[in-house]
Image (cartoon, rainbow, N blue to C red; front, side, top):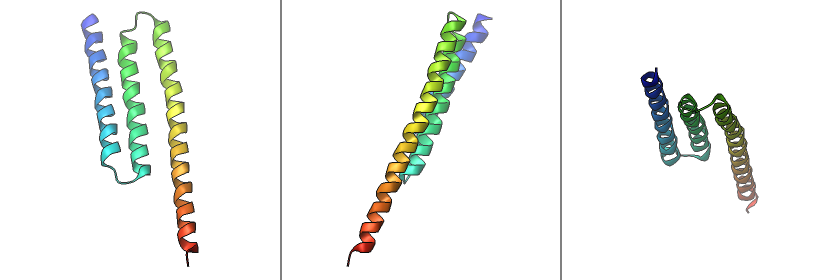
Amino acid sequence: MTAVLDFLSIATITAGAVFFVAGTLGLLRFPDVYARLHALTKCDNLGLGFVVLGLTLRAPSWWMGLKMIGVWILVLAASATAAHLFARRTRLSEDSKSIRRNRAP
């Protein structure tokens, strides 16, 4: 049973690392802010979920596993809020630039 848990833990942590790398590549490669935010938040949240799942399988007690899942849920909420704030600020900045551009004689 330990070998199965070790294999599942390693597989999910590796999957999480792959998603982290994919999110980083999306941040570096996508052309605009909105696509970059989407790639980064989705991949990082999913990557962290896989890492937490892999670590929860190896947690010494169920209480430690619940703590890790709780931290993951808090990170989900925080990253969604931060992405929303960045996207809103970018949109407002673009709107103000276009208004200034249209006013110029």
